[in-house]
Length: 86
Length: 387
Image 1 (cartoon, chains in turn brown, purple):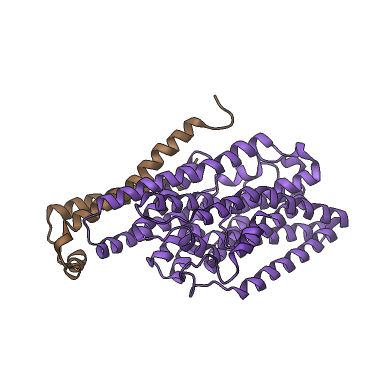
Image 2: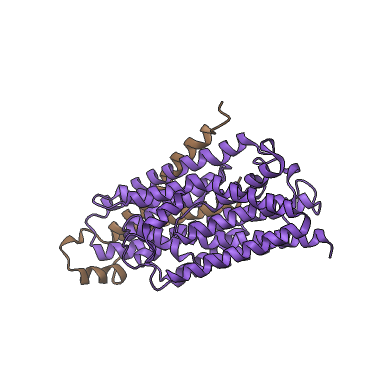
């Protein structure tokens, strides 16, 4: 309908761009939070320990794993779209 | 070796030279935020970006065709036109790099080629509709879209992780930042290396070495990939500094949000056939992270200066491209191109020597922002960019 702007591509770029560009960092953030639950009262040194080692397989860890897996899937889709781009 | 071969050789060398400036001008698009937050040491960052640009250049060849066709009437293009256009692109890239302005290398190239085409064939040699719909409109919209995505992303990550201890949060996001910045590097190699491949292919077609509609030969692909990768590795520290320190004081959650937004918008746009400027997207994203974080300071005057330079990129590169064509054509033949080539090398040398007086490198790229790239007066940069 419009030879100047490809509107159908534009809204897809905006919607998918929001989902991937803002959504994936948010999912990553959820993963980080799941890994470090309500650590406001802990001392920074202890929190650092729990972030890198000594994580028991709790619900938080599983959620974090799912979140990070979702982010990796998004990255994989990005690389796939480069290789098989338009 | 005939005069024609010499001419074509000069064009190819100039095109690879442009590709090199494209690399170091744009390193900051991917790596400025990672360097600013300390997610990666500066030299490691440019090395990763260089390698990923190299890989990216081999991943896809869809943009290469669009840069040449659709913007100018390719049958009116001669090797001299391509050469003059490249001169415009290189000189504008060096000028903006010197002042630490992240202007678009794609626009510099397109402006230069359009300018030299107008000089050679007149205004009808340019496909104006293609220029507006494929270059100018995306250039206006892409930083806004990227900025909005980055602002929302920034707001979300700070909101979600507000109870996570700051040190833990920053370390986590630094890892995310490295991943997202790597995606931008990969996308940059895919997009921008192809633009030079397209230009060299255009010159080969203009010379009759290739038939119209040919794909880029393997040696073109390999040499362009190497040139942009090497340029990226050299690192445009002046632009990195302006993007990473000049616009917004960036923390790692913002850095990840910015690069994720850039990567998503660049990849989606090239997926849908928009060839857009990675620079505009990256700058928009970094501004967006400043808007999305409560209390962050955004230096709108720096952003305004960059935007001013963007507006001037197409016409200024075009004027230089046109002048280069008139000069080369006026002197005539291969000799004319050779003379302009020498002038171009001399001008590049002057820019390089002048830049050493206010040197920005891996050691001082993250120094406190005091209103300018180096010790050079900021006002001069402003005047220079808008002159």
